[in-house]
Length: 109
Image (cartoon, rainbow, N blue to C red; front, side, top):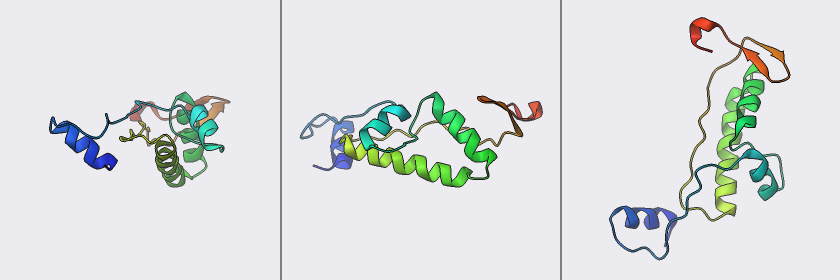
């Protein structure tokens, strides 16, 4: 049974071949260990990495990498449902220090 069919069967209150498996979130450092490469999938480091990418004009490439990493780690763990992390989609005006970024207050950041 495919993951899609397994989840749909469950939502129809019928019995699938096994219980669908879902992980609410996978921290980037954990995903990196699983995949054997630097991965961006979740956790507070994802916010910093997104801010850095957007400051460097690489926001779209970052989002593509996040999606690719999530697909790969979910496949590696044989999860049936993938959760996408919450991204800010905000480009900071400047970096104040190693982990502090500034955006205009009028834009709620």
